[in-house]
Image 1 (cartoon, rainbow, N blue to C red):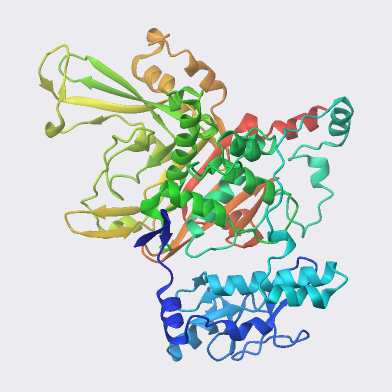
Image 2 (image 1 turned 120 degrees about the vertical axis):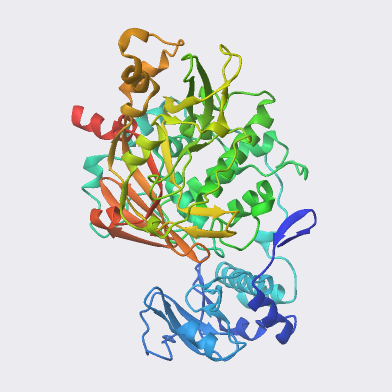
Length: 586
């Protein structure tokens, strides 16, 4: 449940934090203010009773665990190392009222019962005050005077209102063009990759902090941050957030200007590819997304696929309002989100009595695939831009759905396989002028630059009033040829070559030349339907990396193949290998 504060949607806070604050007054964290230590200049805040203290878990006496948390109620230090064990959670369960703790290395509030980070405004203000005092004392010659001034309530220099300067977009001159050309290196430069040590992460690979059940957002953002066309678009300054904000009146103080998700994406790309390796907190992007999707604004776990579709719609909606004109998402002449992810589906419904065929085209931004009929629910769907698509209810939820092995190719074959519609779905034939039984077949008329395949693992039945997750293993190839699923291939196999060219579909020929795709990101889901976790595997320079919120680790190819894929991102091979082919040619 969410509430509105000053017209903005505010998610309901953690119930354990609310209970802790109600029992401890309005300032439950004031005792920790003296323990906040900041390493100047501009360092991260930490919790230490003494500057040289080495915190250890009170249960296992370990100081090298991934996370150490100090209980706010009793100051007991406990470790949290999922999925192995969590002494912090055990401490919270054993003593009621001891659910809230503080990360001793990051100075962040953590709920041991919810096993997730939570936000408290008073504690955050104390951390900011400590960082401001440290920075002021370091840079000022009269450190003690500046500290006393800050404690008494006057604003520090960096928080005072400064004179606004009009933004002017930068354009390189002839000298700067030469410097850029001599020192620029492609992102996938093989010679540059050889200089990277085995322990150093590739450029732009940075962890994302969990802001409270936001692993669904972090997993999709990691995939988007390393989508080659989207990455090149933002890093080449094609969407400048300062220019966009100035054009829409945000810099001039207009409060009615709506937040722009593309601007927040631009800021995120700048931060992730800045070279900083510390985990990044996408809090501003989360807040902006909440404004676009108020029905999903909460600290509850959301569906990663639903977030992906909602985010693309938010970017598209902003661009459409700026252009003041309607453009077809599938035409390729639209916002950057649809230029990259949008394709066109072809649906052929043929009358079994006379052979008349009705053809329709629908834009889509991803492909939602079912498992085989004996292993999952029936029906085909794709996430179209239009909002008139209907949901398919799964009435058959047998126990054998979690058994066996499926492949991505078999799911695509089922997606494009002709199926006979039932007697209750008779098609009105324009030639017969009556409703007749029909044969329906889906195919892909236009391939997107990046294809996202979403496997339907979550099933909901209104008849049985239950929901479940399909834990079936799915094999997905690292290289995928989409030619067999194109409209040209489907119609050629049905009618032969005598029908070409058909319906003026000239772009199908170009599709066949760019039908080879390479896998670069896999979003996985582990756990139950109501208590799961999202993780992303990224393929960079032919090496796989596991992105688990703030933690980035290198993994083997076998780990990725064994993962429970939920969303697979493929990019056209000609785009994925463009930089490396240039190096080989030279």
